[in-house]
Length: 265
Length: 147
Image 1 (cartoon, helix red, strand yellow):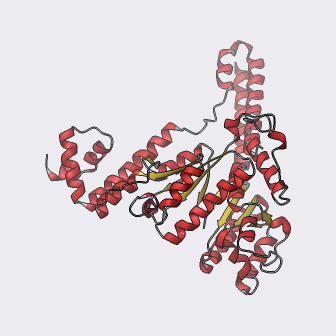
Image 2 (cartoon, chains in turn cyan, yellow):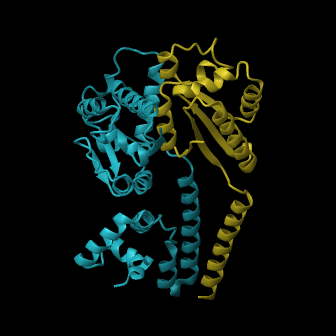
Image 3 (cartoon, rainbow over the protein chains, first blue to last red):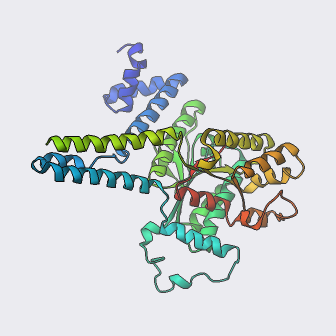
């Protein structure tokens, strides 16, 4: 195997797709560790692979015409089938329009209640949930949680402080309003410093938040961890409890497709 | 069979016509929330320029556009008191239907009086939590933009 082969996009793609022998892989990593440009290319390819995977895992809801098979199967009753097909088409169009307009969900209602109540600051808001600890407004608890993804990509201590204030403020807000919530703070780029044991400006605060709020997850990006090793020769030691995911960007897209709200801090 | 084909073609062409009408409307209706939580004056002015361009592209009648300010973002409305450029931009955006909303937690935490310290803020412009409002709006189909 020549050097050129090792550097080719095909080779890197094969590496990303895990199609190489262990020996080839070992060789490749030696080369990549020496060459910054090469490691950047690898990083890019990984990102593309993640995005492609993501795109195929979650295809957009296809706007299939449900009338098509009907029309074929019932060709003996042309007129009736035609009317049926026209009707289903129209129904499809109407449904499409409907989907486009906003739909109110239990979660939003809960927030609306919180909004209405918050300005008045009435002491106790538990009234309606008294008999049903696991339900609110009669809906399943699983559907009831707000899901929010915070994204941090800078290592500036003052900025990180603001970000943690926002995360903690929201956790507290939902807690005070008896609103279930799942919150993730995802860090990539220099933001990863927040979760590094030996570099975090606020390690104690991270640990405290982890203990205090079981509905909060700190998430770090593997690509950023790799880059730390490649560019600065640092092995990232992360605060226990940190979740590591493949790619921050891919995670942000996944979460939004899953209905999470996205907030950049 | 022929009838079926004719009817199918009619149905399809009406669908196509519907799509064409939709396309002629340009971007159609949009719901957007802009997020401002920074103190940088240039960045705040740039954000309002973005919003104006957004309105120009989509049309004010097609837009439900909210600006949610919290944390240091409140300084936008503080500056509007005595910075004529910022003030005129705020006035102009509001005239075009933009809703400027400010975080109640921020006002409380920083001891800001919305009447005395901020430019043209009504009680109804205050939301309990800026971040929760942004999450809430995204749940209602608003797109999130952080300029």
